[in-house]
Structure formats: structure tokens, C-alpha cells
Length: 591
Image (tube, rainbow, N blue to C red; front, side, top):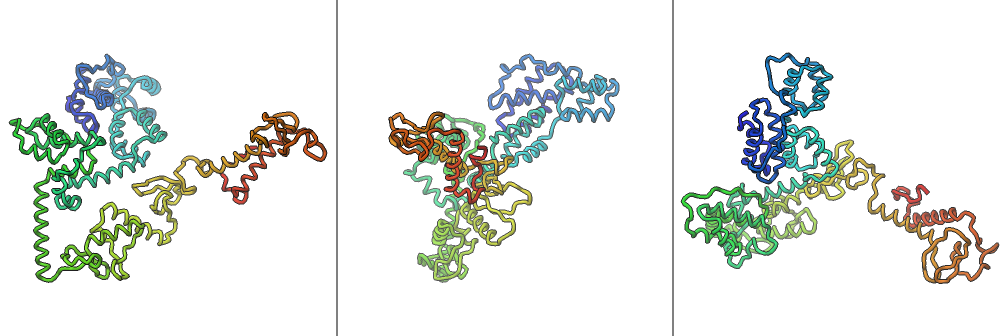
């Protein structure tokens, strides 16, 4: 089989992984050079060996001089088993063929056909033989494996599952089962919540990268020229807490921007300007070329530092940004002149600024005029107090519509505001079956029969029990779970039971209890007391017909009675006797 055929299969499997194309080429060479058999039907087996080697390689580079197959004959057990010979007698009947597939569901049908023809066994012998050899597995569709994983682990990061599916699709079924078992038992895989939060963050960051527009950028960074060219500004990459990955990202940006300069020179200037990216960039614009032809581009890794991405976006698109600012200033001057000429200037009813052009005005539902700054400040104050309705600032019973607020509020703040308003409206509708997450305000109507409430709020996404309103405890029942309040109640009763069992010396407060003997007790401090009533005594005159008994016939039963009396008193204090369901685990249950 030609090397390109293996490469066409392996490249999609390890796409977006740490395995490079060079590593794939080297592994293909290793496997093919170790197998001198030109039989093309070994493709599936070779592919599995190549995949195993690449998985073992991980992030390291494969070295063709040092990587060996350890003289292992991967093909020995299958010698002559996967070749296709038109002259061999016919193999299994269709019925037996399907029976074998039922016994070995992961076996490759093509391999089974060839193997049965070459060995010409009956059904029982064939089953025994296949049980002892490492037969060729069926090549699974990674997309099918991915869909299966998403159904089994719905709360897992889908990208993580996709990458696992690419690997598991070329491994035996045991690997798939082991992966699922560990994932379900340990739950240490990246979560769907992490994925959604990351996706939202990437969407926000895309305004500075793939979806950059000068207009949108200036909305997010109103004065970039003044901000980034200020010599007194503290560089983004300054201080001891900077991430090494951020520094590498900044250097990669500079290396790609100035491909005619040596990387060592760029790095030297970068540190000379104390990692100030803007000053370094402007300096490099005047450094003479060191190469006739440009260096190759370096692949940029992911960066989540918003401030760094803002500065890099400014340096990449500085010309467009300056042009947009110039156009905006010209438009404003023209609009101001036109407004004065036609007497269209407005006055804010809050701050009384009387130089507002029409484009700067916002209105309540009764058309009172306000500037954007006042509406923004007022709305943020209402949100800070937990409100979702925004009354007019003038002497007016009207409100501001949400489309007005969207023009002045940050996208994230506005999105949370809409969610909160939506939840309030849903609750006020008194819908049958409406439930709210115990850990946030998210509300929905769960499907009938569902025992678990799955929160749809990205910042929460907790799964809770619909009966006890605690974190999901499937497969255990609510009565089998003990929470903090249950532990405190049980512990309080247990402590009272212990106190009822123990006696306290009236003189030194030492705690003790007896296992045998009479009821006249002498403490280590010398004090004497009655074990029954706890009173201080001097001799045996306390005991007798008119006092406590000198001996207790059934000391164990006496202790048990005292313990149960202590527990009963504690339950009365906690109100358990009035509401027995209040105590989930009764310490006296088995006494």
C-alpha cells in the first residue's frame, strides 16, 4: 500500500492534536520498513500499529534513528491469514458467518472472509482459533463513536470527546469500554460548562482577531491611540505575574510581523523596551532588513489575555483604526454644525447638557430626552440594586425600553439582565410544573418522569435532585444521603447520649463511668459521689431503703436507659418528636 494512503487516513485521526505531520511520516516509514512483506491486505493491521506508535509518542518527536519496533513480529500470528487468494475453497456459509460476527462484533468482515477461506474450519474450530489470535478489528467511523460518547457523557466537553473518538475508533473495543468506565466512575473529564464558558470567551476575543472591524473595536476600546502610545502607560506584559505563554504569543506576533528581521534582534529590542509591545513595534519599523527573503510564518497558539489581544489588534490594524477615528470626528463635526444650523440641538433632562446632537439622544417611552452617559449610569445603578425595570429619570411614570438599554450597556451585563427579566416573567406566569434551580434563578418545566433538574445557566449547569433539592445523588435515594444539616443534628444527639452515659466529678469535673462494683464512687481527686444520682457523699449512709441502691443489678440496662433518655431529651430540643421526618439518621435506631 502506498505511503500516501496511510497518511490520508492518519491525518484526519490526529487533526487538532499535538501529533505533527512529520511525526506521522516518520511512523509510516518505521512500520513499512520493518515489514518486508508486500502483501497489500495488511493495511488495517499496519494502520493499527502506526496509531499505537503515534499515541505512545504524544507530544515528543519520533526519531527514526532511535525508534524501533523492538523486534516484535506484529504479523507473525496473522501470517497467511489476511492474504486474499481466489483459488482457495469457499469459506463459511452466510449463517455461520453471521454467527461469528455475533460472537466477535468488532472483527473486520473482510478479514473474517479471508481467514475462513484460508483455514477452512468448521464453526466451533473457527471460534476457538479466533479466540486465541489477535484478529484484525473492524474500522469504526469516528463520527459514530463521537455520537455514542456524547450520549453516554452528555455533560462532557464535546471537543474533548471528539478527540477521544478519533483515537478510540482505531483501537479495540476494550479501550472504548475502559475509557467509558473510568470516565463515569471518576468524572475527571473536561465538562460541558467549561466548554461553553470557553466558547463564550472565544466569541468575545474574536472581536480582536478573526472578526475584527475597526468600528466594533472602537466601541470596545474608545481611545486606543491615546491608550497604547502613552509613554507613562504600564505595559501589559509587566510585573512578576505575567504568563510565559502570553510573552511567547507577543514574540510570535512580532516574529510574524517582521519576517525580514532576525528573531534574536526582535527579542533583544523587545526586552530593551521592557516588553512594551507598542514601543517595540514602532521601533522595529525602522530597523533595516536582515534577509533578502522573508522567514516562514510561525503558527500562533491560543491566547486569552484580553488586554494583550487589544494591543496586538491595534498594532495590526492601526492604519484602519486611525482612519475610522478620523471619519468619526469629521462626522461629528459636520453633525454638530448641521444641528446648530437647523436648531436641532437637544438638552439632557438629567445632566442638562444642551449640546446634544440627535445621534447622542436616547428617550424614555414618553419621549423625555437623555444623553447616553446618563442612561448608562442610571441603568447600572438599577442593576446594582437587583432591579429589572428602569423608570424615567424625569418626573415621569414611564420606563426605558430594553432596546434603548442595549445601546449603552455591556453585552454581558445586558444578557444577564435579559435572563433575569425573563425568569421573573416566567415565575409571574404561574405555569404548572415550573421549577427553579436550587443554586441559581434559572427556571424551566422539566420533562415528566425526570428525577434530575438540569440547569441551563452556563454559569451554573448543576444537576440537582427534584425531590430533596440537593446536588444529584443518582443512583442513591434521598433517604440514603446525609447532608450538613443532617450531620449536625445526628452529632448533637450522639453527644447528648454520651453525656448521659458519663458521670462528672462534683469537685474536679473529671468524666468517668463504671463497668462494675458498687455505686459509691471515689474520684482520683478523692471526692466521693453516688453513681446513680451524682450527689456528693461521705459514706454509705446515702444508700439504703430511703436512698439509692448500693448495687445495680443490670448495669448494662441501666446505662442503656440513661443513653436513651439523653437521646429523647435531645430530640425534644430539636423538635424531632413533633416532626419525625426532620431526622434522617436516628442514632438510637438499632439500640
